[in-house]
Length: 60
Image (cartoon, rainbow, N blue to C red):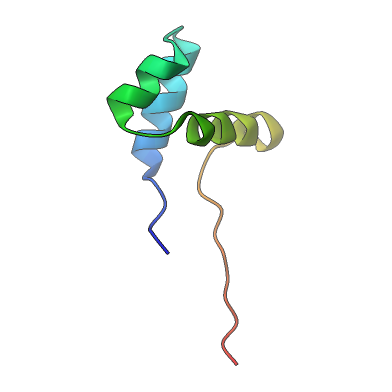
């Protein structure tokens, strides 16, 4: 499983959106998908932050 995007990249992308930059331009510049940006914005709206969700795996 690939590592999550850095918090710094997430912050730059979300801040660019709130500054009024278009989503497509942000995604091209940051090399992320539109869906990824939309998920970060949705997570921020729901939880107040856009940090990666830590997943815990159980080893049996």
